[in-house]
Structures are given as structure tokens and as C-alpha cells.
Length: 515
Image (cartoon, rainbow, N blue to C red; front, side, top):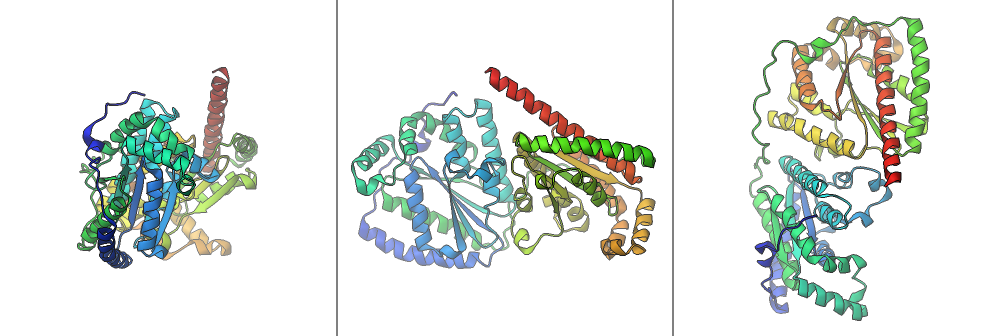
């Protein structure tokens, strides 16, 4: 991979800062009080704080994190050491790379300190030859998107790159090699940093320049003098917190300007669905048996080949999502799937980015997760009912596309179904539920109230399909006035997509064997 020549971005941080012990002690005493007070105020605030500690001084990142844990109240701060591929758990490795960051995000009022993490990971992968230049570019873009989504949701991002001049790093490593007192801190990867120093620094510069934004700026801190480094990081954390806390009514960074969604010229997306489609019982029974047998084989093979899948179901109330999902799960080995029913967010979920609870449910390799209601609630019920601001639901289209792109890039097929019924058929099913004891619980006052906003939901569905139906994660609009027809259409689609994914995996395996 081509790298740029050494530039002044890091040279400017090689000025040899020093801080004597007495001066350090005096300044630290006051700073610790300020940090604790700011942390206490943060506990009552409507935002969380994420501190990223990365750099060519890995032991220094650990020392700074330990100092922060000592100076601040560790009960309200989590630390996550995520240095490179070698620190991924088995569960992390079986999911998209950003999974391990999303699931560790702190709730509002709290702080999380990440060591290494996303900035170090993309550089490390490039140096190891695990990704090509195009993938390195995509890695930077994914960092930009991740940080932008957090900032727009109100998270305070404070990022540090702890920098050691090459000669200082070399001296420190050689000294540690001879000294039992310091040698225990040094690992093989620290020597690898020195070995690849110039190439690595050029790659880091690209990442830092591209991801140095007003909402998530980088702080480059010289790490030669430990006292200076620790105090500089703590001071900047306090300054960032103080600025944010001084403006409690501060509106989180808004999304980039979004043009008005285009007016509908002619039909809405749902108008193209033929609701008259039906299927007689004999044909249904025959096809159901064949397709469920096929799905069972696919599910077993997906598990054997360690391929995960995500099925997402949306639709009108009483459209038949539950019954359709049961026809899928009845055909799959029970150990191969999980059904996740989405309701209003809990207190824990509401304290984080709305996508957090969905990232946590991403399946491990070989598992299939079926969502009954999904992340699309942000652009459907939250949009129509006013639970999300216009800025929030408008930028959600891009956030959702990015989320699904992470899944697809990991090899997870994403199948999205909208089950469509007419208003008349929905009302008939509502009335039937009243007379069916085991279905009465499904009917609420909200179901009838939502019917009054049918045109608003139709437009929301149209925009959802238009903005988020992509080549890799298309929407399937299913006519569901006839439940038998809908179930067969879904089963056929799932089986076809699963077979395609398995065929692609076999083809890729053959290519790998040849090379």
C-alpha cells in the first residue's frame, strides 16, 4: 500500500515537553477536583462521553487510562482495551468489526474510555497486509460515519493520539528489554510498531486528517514525558466536558443539509402491490411442505458454514408478521435461530443511540436472527407520531444504510419484508381478534388510533423503501391480504436468498483453494 511522506502533523508534537514533579503535583491536585466535579455534573446531563486513547505509545495509553481511573470516579467510567485483532473475543470476531464498539457505548451521563479501538484497528490491518488500499479507504469512511452518528446523537467524543518520536520509542523499548521493572509492559506488537514506524505514521496521518472534524477533533499529545502526557490528556478532557456542560441546552450537531424528500410523482411504493393475489389451500399445503424442507436444509448448511443471516419484518398492524415468522421458525432447527420482538425502548436502551439495541442483537456466525419490528421504527412510527425530530428521522436513512452495509460486508444476508394489507382487511382482522380469546391481547387502542394516520404511514413507508432499498439489502413488499400467499412468498424469498448465499460461499472457497 502506498504511503505519503512524513509531514508536519506529528513533527509539531515532537518539541520535548517536560514537567517537573513539584509542578505536576500542584497542577494535578486542582485538576483532580475539577475532573470529579465535571464527572458529577455529567451524571445529570443528557449526553455521554467517549474518550479514545490511541497512538504509537501503547503502554502510554494504558498508563493514561489507569491514571484517569484513579483521578476520576471509576464507578461511572468503563475502560475497554481494544488493541488490534488479537484482542477480539470469539464473539467479536464472529460479527462485523464495529459491533464491539457499538455494544460498549456508555449510557447518557457516563464515560467510556476506549484504548486503541477503531483508529488503531484500520491502521494495524493495513500494516499487516490484511486489507488493500481500497479497503483502507473504506475503513476510514466507516470511522467517519461511526463518529458522525455518535456526535449527531449528542455523544461528546474526545480523541487522543499519544505520539512518541521514533528515537524515543526505540530507546524506551531497548531499555525495557534490559529492565525487569519495565520489561513486563512491553509486548511483541510494540516492537512491530517500531519496525513499521515510518509506514505506520504515514497511514496514521491519513486517518487523523480525514477524521479530524469539528464534532470529533483529534488531540495529538507528545508522550515522551509521562507527567506532561497524563496531565495534558486530563486537562483536555476537563476542558471539553466543561465547555459542553456550560451549555446544557446545546443542540447536538445536526445532520448535513438534507433536501426535502422528493414529491411523489404518481403511485406510492405500496400502490404497486397486488393485494388481490391469493393461493388455494391445497397449493399452499404442497408448497409449504416443500419450502419448509428446503429452509431446514439451508438453515443447517448455514450453521455448518458459519454464515449468519438477518431477517427483518415490518408491516401494518395485523398484517400477519407473527404467523409468517412461525412458518419460518417451524422449519428451522431451534438452536439455529433467535426471534427478537421489538417494542418501545427500555430505559437502558433509550439512554443510548437508537441503533445500539440492534447492534447488540447481531447474530454470531451460523445463527439467524429474525426481527419482529426493527430499526425502521425511527422512520416509521417515530416519524409519524413525533417521537423523533425531523432532523433525527431524516438522517436515519443514511445511518440505517450504513448499519446494513456493515452487516452485508461481513457476509450476512439482510432480508427485509413489508407485509401489506388493505385498510378493509386490517379492520376485518381487528374485529376477528375481539372474538378470539388467544388473540385479544394483540389488540390495543393504539391499533385503532394508528388507522387514522394511514396516509401518513403510507408516505413514510414510501420514503423508507425509496431511501433504504439497496442492491445488497432490498425491500420485499409482500401482498398479505391472503395470509397463505404472503407466507409462501416470504418462504420462497428466504430460501432463494439463502441458496444464493451458500452458492457464493462455495464459489469463494473454490477460489481460495486455487490461490
